[in-house]
Length: 102
Image (cartoon, rainbow, N blue to C red; front, side, top):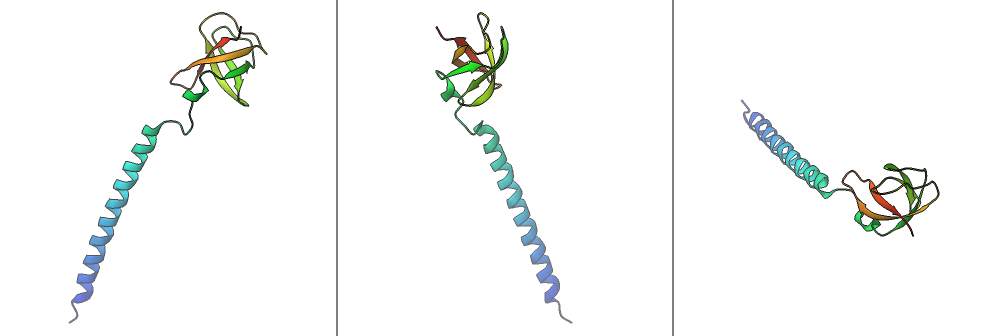
C-alpha cells in the first residue's frame, strides 16, 4: 500500500555510502599529506647548534642539544663524555653528525 518508505531507505543507503566514500578519500589524502610532511619540528635548524656529549664515542653515541638527548655520529676522532660539540649535519634517521668544538 505505502511504497515511499522503501524508496526513502534506498536513498538513505546511497547517501550513507557516498558519505562513507567521501570520508575515506579525505582520510587517505590527509594521511598521505601528513606522512610526506616529515617531522613536526625543524631538525635542520639544529645545524650549527652546540651540545654536549652524554657518553664517549668514536663513531656513534648520544649528545644533549637544547635540553634533549639525540643520537649522534662523528666522522673523525673520538669525542669524550662532557666535551662540547657542534652539529654539522642531520642524517635522514634523525642522527646528528657532530664535531668537537675547538
